[in-house]
Length: 283
Figure 1 (cartoon, one colour):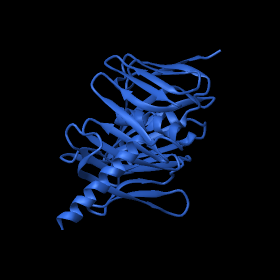
Figure 2 (cartoon, one colour; figure 1 turned 180 degrees about the vertical axis):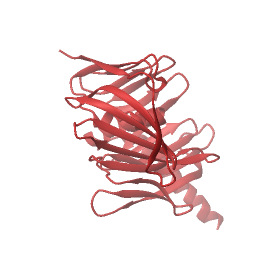
Figure 3 (cartoon, rainbow, N blue to C red; figure 1 turned 120 degrees about the vertical axis):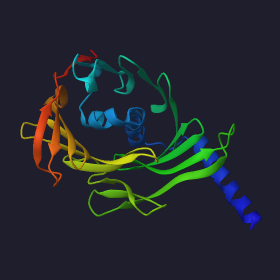
Figure 4 (cartoon, rainbow, N blue to C red; figure 1 turned 90 degrees about the vertical axis):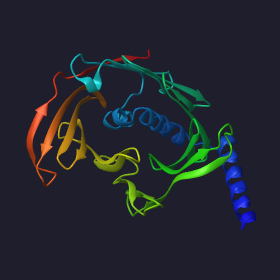
């Protein structure tokens, strides 16, 4: 019995070591979507209601969000290189810097946090201190299938599997991420390829205090983007992105207080100020 345990641990170590050092065979789609994964991991809430992947940012050098009143979008500048890759997001309190190698993001750094990315096929290995997380790409969505704790001082040896999940795909474009621990969905989306309109439902927070969030993305009749973030059965934030040539030029934020059915709006309040987005382009 002890021998079996040792062999299992050895196999885990070999798998992790291979994942950490293999970086060949990475597709352009994996590299592209990995940027958005890192952006959202470093900005969990902002990344979900400011979906960069749904905007046409070809030829953009930087985009500036100017707002003195709206706290959600207060003076943010997002920068790109000539290849169209996101390289920096600068806010009043902190900055995010992205480092690339072979056109793949390998490090996301802020003042207080750093994530390192490694690659193996359609899998991204995210390293954060003594935690390693595996994300598998399905369509345009990365799904977190494994989280390991690493042994102190050893970046290739795992001591504990913290979370394990499996991906279930359905006919069409929908899928679910099911937790092995309790067989409950951790993530649900109606479109793994993020074809509008689509929804995604997931848990936010930590093990001690988590809550269910649903994001719904759709275009209105004028082609503007609407993002509805339902935080509870009675609370929803609506972000209306006024679009021009596939790019947002302003954002209005409305808070909806819902009835018991979770759909009917009984009261709404418009956030002060409408952030305006300006652009600088490469020649």
